[in-house]
Every structure is written in C-alpha cells, then in structure tokens.
Image (cartoon, rainbow, N blue to C red; front, side):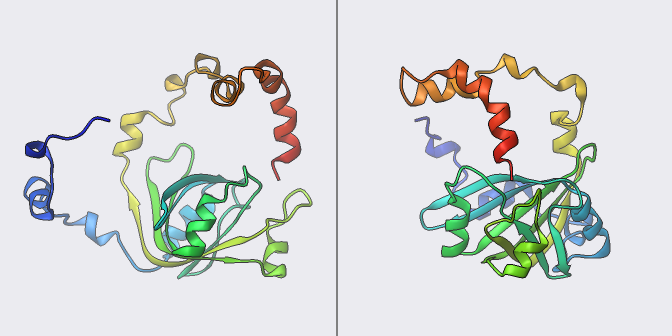
Length: 210
C-alpha cells in the first residue's frame, strides 16, 4: 500500500484552506436547501444517478438508473423518491441507509455537462401504494428510498469536459477490457465457464433487469 509521506500530507483544515482558499460567488450562491423549479427540471430529466451512503461499517457509492421520467420523483421541494430496482442483492447502500441515513445523489444527464448534487438523509419505505407507483414491466421495487433534502447544488462542466464523458470519439470498445465472465473466473474458481457466462448474460439481463 502506497502511503503519503508525512511532510507531503495535508493533515489539517488550515493547511487545506491555505492551499485552496474559500469558495465564492456562484460556487456559494448555487447551493440552496430545497429543490427549486430549475433543479427539479434537472432531476426529472436525469436517467442516472450515483448514490453515496455512509455508516460505521464504511462508505458505499452505487449507480442507479431508469428511463427518463420513470426514475427519481420530486415529491416536494424537500423530498426526492427513488425506487430500488433489481440488483445483485448485496444491499450495501440500503444497510447504510437503515443504520445511518446520510446520503448523497449525483444526477447525470447524457449530453449535459453539469451534474446536480442532492445531499440529505434517507429512509426506506415499503408503503404498498408508493411501491405500486413505481411499477416497471409489471414488477414493483422492493423498497423506495425517500431522501429528505438538506442541500442541493449543481456542479460545473469542468470534470465532464476534461473526461470527454459524452464525446462518442472518446468511447472504447467493451472488448478492449476483460469481460465480466473473465473477471468472475479469475476471482472465483478455475472451472467457471467464462465464455458461456458472457454468451448467456444478455438474455439473463433482459430477464432480470426489473
């Protein structure tokens, strides 16, 4: 494990502020304690969000997504609702939400440079009517994340511009990386059939996505 040398480590807030200074202008003004009409438009147009959570056991960040208009719902200026769709059933994030509640959402919209961040506290609901309102392909989520909003602000375009995230010319073929089957084979056991797994995965995905 590579460690930072003590003389090169930022070890106090005072050191950090001496290097970076303080936010000002728009960086401060864009943060509000509720979902404005402008921010609501971003949330309702987003098909994807990264959901971060924290508890004594550690931190977690997980991708979440659904078709635009079927994803996160703004219930009111202080509340966002997110259905928990079918996944790998590790429920790391959900464990954190139950134990602690602190969470953060970062919404991304394909082709849009800004990201929108929502910070607050989450609860998990299994209200039957709420679950039914998020039905997709005849299936209900097993729970809905209810985020009580503390802060909302948008992130400027710099990171997405630098990464060329939405630039088709920056895309790489999936075949340039190890396949899912190859990674599982390396991690689990030698007799795992990676080729068969990769061949069958598209059908498995279509069957289990909701």
